[in-house]
Structure formats: C-alpha cells, structure tokens
Amino acid sequence: MSRIAIIGAGLSGRLLALNLLRFASSDAAISVRMLDRGDERDMGPAYSYEADYLLLNVPAGRMGAFPEDPEHFLTWNRDRGAHAGPWDFLPRRLYRDYILALVREALQARAGGTTFEHVRGEVTDIDTEGGCATIHVEDKGPIVVDKAVLALGNFPPRHPPIENRSALESERYIRNPWDPGVLDCLSRRDTVFLIGTGQTTVDLAVALHRRAHEGRIIALSRRGLLPLAHGGFDPYESFFEEVKESKTILDTFRIVCKHLDRAESMGIDKRAVIDSLRPDTQTIWLGLSRTRSAGSFVISFVTGRSFVAEFRRRAKPSSTRCADPGSSTSWRGGSVTSRSPRRPWRCTTSPAGALGTRSRLRPSSSTVSDRSQTTAGSTIPW
Image (tube, rainbow, N blue to C red):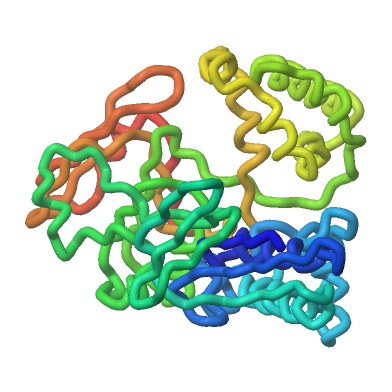
C-alpha cells in the first residue's frame, strides 16, 4: 500500500485528497493523511470567511472541481436550490462547502483498503531517508510515508523593501491583510494605503465599501493596474496542440500573441484565447525549460505585449466597480522605498523604465499623495 501525506488542507490539498480517493482502487489501495493545524472547515484565507460579498473571481460555470465537467459546481448549487447562471459569481464560502462535500462523498465511496485521516497539528520537520519521508508533527509521533506533498498555500506577504525598517513595528503597519479583524482599528474617515493592486486589494476595497468607509483609499503597485473585470464572451477553440510543441516561454508567447491577433480579427474577445488554454496551463508550464525561458519571457514583455498578463488576471465585475468613477480610491504605479511610522505619509514617484515607476514615501503634513508627481496608474474619486 502506498502511503501519501498531504501537508496543507487548503484548496489544493483537499483537491489532491479528493482525486486520490476517487482514483484509488481495491487493487491499488492507498493510505492518505492530510496534515494541517486548522479545523475541519478551514481552507485558507480565500475560502474560510463567511461574508457573502467575498465572491469567487471566476464564474460559477467554470469552477467545477473536475476538468471533464466544468459546470459541476454550478449544478451542485442548483441542486440545492440556488438560482445561479453560468456567468454568476457566487460567494467563496459556497465553494468551500462544495469541496468539503465532495471530499465527504469520496470518502464514503472509496475503494476497499484505502484509508484517509485528517491529522490536526503543525508540521515542524521532514526527514528523507531510504526512499521514505518521516514527518514530524508538534505534540504527535512521527509519520512515515512513501510520498509527501507540500500544499502550503500562500505565505503572508513579505515586508516592503523600505529604508526605515523600524516602521514595520508600527501599529499603523499591517503585514497580513487577512488577519482577523484587520479593519476593526480603522475609523470611518481614515486614509488607507494598500501596497499592491491585485485581487486582495480589490477584496479590501470592497470590504471597506461595505463598511461605508469615507476616507481615501490609495493603492500602489509597480504598474498601477487593477485586474480586469470578467465578462461574457464567445469561446475560442483551444490551440494547445500547437502550444505543446513549444520549448521556451518566448515560443509560447509568440503563439499566444498570434491567436490574440486572430481572435481580434474575428471579433472574439481576447480573454477567450487565454481561457481556451486554462485546462492545459500546468502541462504547458511543466514542459518549458526554466533555464532557457526566463530571460525570453522578460524580453517579450519589455518589447510591448505586456497586456497579455492582464487578460489572465481578472476579478468579478461587482468588485471592480468599486473603482468606477465616484469612488475615493487612487490606483498608482510605483514602489515603496521608505516610510515613517509616526507622521502622515506623502508619496512621490519618478519614472523607472517601461514597466512602471519608483516611489518614495516620506513624512508630510498631508495624508494624501502628491498627485502631480504620479506618472503611472490613475486616480478615481469614490
């Protein structure tokens, strides 16, 4: 019997456990142990909050847990009385409930001889010797397995590379935006400065909007770009057979750009081109040469086709509307280099090449960034 340990019980860890249980057979029984310090329903910060306004970033019709049935999640919700369509964006807590239900069903239907255990505890060390892995868990005995899978999820954000490191100890600075009660210390008119303009920033802007926050919200990133909003569009035929012959990222990039141009000429939304490769992205990535492709990837973006990344990173329309005209949110391009822990902030930026700007935060009598110095991104009144 093959012994497998999954370290981490977030979405990736549970999906792996689900599929191991589904495909195990009585002729090839397995023992699966999933180790995590959280409780039974904890699936990491993205899926563990109960707020209904925290929605999935992908439409329900594309969130099925099984590649052969992308609408499985949508069907599961409809069977439970939800009035949802393929392009609806459902609460993330429903996706957590969906995955947990699938794991329970797989446990009930598992092949004879296959075992599963959810071990609650913190992994402190792993030793590998003799073809096995010995996993050490705090306050528990060692666990010996044949294979250990690290499904660790996202670590807390790294500290910004600022000059004044003592500022990181200030109560004004919050490293992890998913800490419980992270917004509780804010008054209604406080100015909030967010480093980054990705999905988490959009979530925080929505949360502040729901709290009727009246203060300024300033978000800074190197390019000052938000995720694009999802939208309905016709599908584009997969060209994976063409892409899979690529040996470098540059080759893949050229093929994708060719199909983006083709889709545009056909009147098809360019996002459909990227979506057509979603089922095969892992295969494409693993087939690339890391040593030969990294430089080519950077060169390709510098030469002017950087918009491709924005077709990949998207958010639900209701969230991106928080940045529509009429909001008090500023989206700016730059990099944080210094910060004062005691005095209000002023942000000035100067050009730093084709992909963005460099920024410097320094004490000022004003809490609002000097807009005249901003050279990337945009400022939108709430």
